[in-house]
Length: 183
Image 1 (spheres, rainbow, N blue to C red):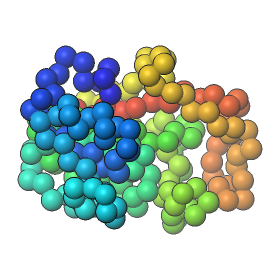
Image 2 (cartoon, one colour; image 1 turned 45 degrees about the vertical axis):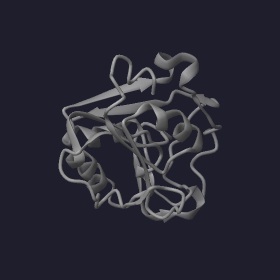
Image 3 (cartoon, one colour; image 1 turned 90 degrees about the vertical axis):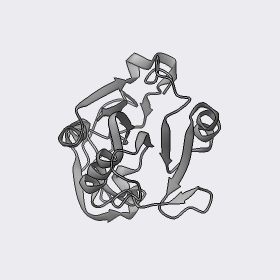
C-alpha cells in the first residue's frame, strides 16, 4: 500500500477498510484523517455495512480498501458500482481478489469447498472495474518485490470434483496482482 500511496498526503483522507485485517488496521489507523473499519457481520468493526448498499453519500470517501471480499459477494458488480459511487473524484479503491487462473469462473451458488466464494477470479476479473472507474492500475508481484507476495499454491490438481471449473496451472508460485481503481 505504501507504493500505491507514495506522494499522497494521507493525513486528511477518509478511508474505509472492509473486512479489516489486524495487521493493516494497526498500520493504517494512525496514518489517515478518518479511518473506519466495516464489515457485513463482524462485531469488531466501527460499522456494519453491505458493500452492495453503502451508507455513505455520493463522493464522500477518498479510499476504499476491500481485500479478498468481492469473490464472496453474489452481486459483485453492484458492490463495485457502490464503491465507485461513494468515492470522490480522484479517490481510489484497492480491491484485490484471489487470482486462480486466466478466466473468471462463476459458480451457480456459493461454493462451500472454496470458502463460500461465488466465483474463482481470473486475470480477466479486473475488466469489471473499468465500467465504474476512470483508471485501473495493476500492481503485480514483480513490481512490489519483497512487499507483494506471490501466490504459493499447487494448482496442478485442478479441476477437482469440488471445483470442477477451475483451471489447471503448472508450478506452485504464481504472480499476484492488486488492482487500484481511480475514480
